[in-house]
Image (cartoon, rainbow, N blue to C red; front, side, top):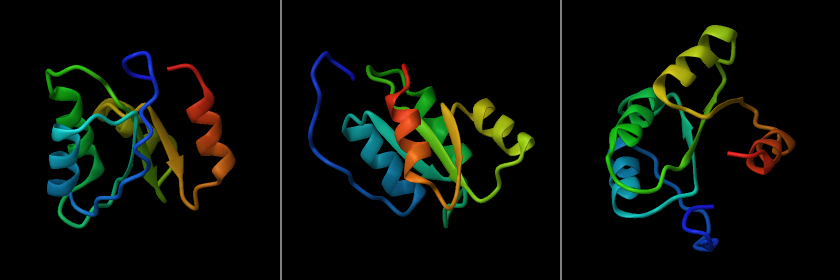
Length: 102
C-alpha cells in the first residue's frame, strides 16, 4: 500500500478529533479506523477533513459504530469513509475489508 513498499510502524491510537487530525496530517497511514462517536466531535468530521487534504497518500478510512443501519452506512460513505463496520467488530470483517482491493 502507498509508495510501493509496506510501512511497518505498527498501530497507533488517538482518542480525540484534535489528536487524530494532527497525527494524520503529520504522518502517513495506510488505514484509519475511526469511531463515529468521538468525545469532541463525530467521525464524519474527521473523515471529511482527512479527505479534503491536498497531500499525497490517501488512507483507507473505516467507520466503526454501533449504529449500522442503511442510513448510517450511507452517511459514512458520503463523509468519505471506505467502509462502515459494526461493533462489536468481528476480526473477520476487518480482515476481509483489509484484504480486498482498494
